[in-house]
Image 1 (cartoon, rainbow, N blue to C red):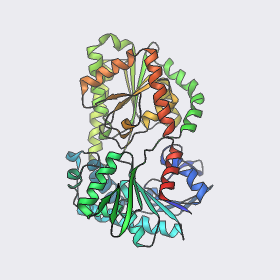
Image 2: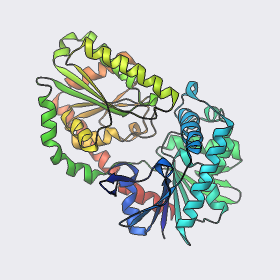
Image 3: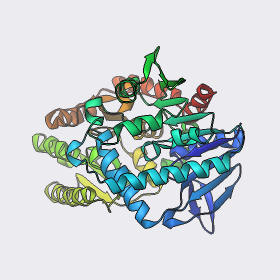
Image 4: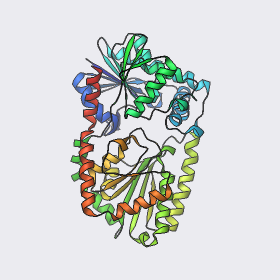
Length: 438
């Protein structure tokens, strides 16, 4: 059974004159399955490129998109309509009919490229909100084994209904045989949307639509456990060097791409409150906020960047040595080394489908994450310190609690956390979903 993956981002990185499979993320989770089954990966070709990339056990088929299509499909519909709506940020929702036309056209192009690559008997696995229409398009053109995984939250019906194309989006996903989400809450919201918007019948957790059974369930994704545990020894020296850059200080870390869903501003304000209420700690701790630039072509992100740089600069001036902001993309080893150097990680998104940072941090460090209760991972990770990122005083107090935690409690929490993270292994997630797809 060849496996064809459809995902907006290609699973490779440029190394010298060639390509390698990307480390971490979806690529690391799916590559073992593709190598085992044979198949292909359909992705957007950066810079409008088409063609193929041939790697061991994997062929990447690039879908060439014009700049106009990218502007409508990606920067427009995906990032200004679907992304804020799925994360419950209605005030940031924007919509244009031209964006929808581009979104439909790109989904059609992906489906056609997948069918050309798949051949007889192939299974198709569609990923995320960029390609919600692709499952139905694949089925209309003869595909008979189609799965889809939705990596972001699924919103309540009254929020989804704001989208003029909500029914079309749901019907697109109902083209699949199996629709997966991170949590049962998201799955139940989707069932309700399918019932109310598309007339699907709900029976025993499955949907019945146009004479077909569509299974819906929770498949919580994890991280590359073996790879991260193996990396821990490589990180020791660099982590020691990072600690030496901040002598006498206990290190806290936050790592995010630039996004209003990540709660970075709220986190920095809580840290400012912590130091204001506990001035004696200003010489004992340092918070390293690592922010990777993202989507700066979208107006909302340009404004967020300006506000973040102002707040970060003010914190660095007010509490010299106690706060450091790095606004740049770090390579994976450097990012993990910062995790290994820190005894607390602030993982405080305002809303997140799952969130893998808390898991990565747990595997390479000796510390604990403060984790937002609004991340999907909060349902699966015992031992973390759960926080409300909207509660500035509560988050500030949780920072103090994490720093003052007795060693015995920290060990017990870490033991429970690590056991849970190891169960949520990325390769096991992929295998479990494909087994359910049949």
